[in-house]
Length: 107
View (tube, rainbow, N blue to C red):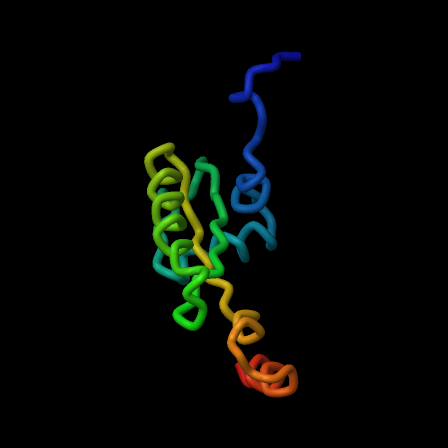
């Protein structure tokens, strides 16, 4: 058995490279968002999570950092999938606890 990393299957290819119904779903999700298959086929698909929000200045620098991470993934030959998580940021805004829960639920 070889210790060469190239012998290992990428975790993302265990999802997107499957030749069954679930693999079809995973590939369709990316293709439906406008991503051609050659952008992610055989490449590591890397998820980038970001909590940047216009409502919380303390997280403002995450927007720039996430863009640098995204560019680094592209430069390394991967495919970045970017997501911004902002629904919990209402708890950082100076509302009372009850108002924050209502605003979060409305989203």
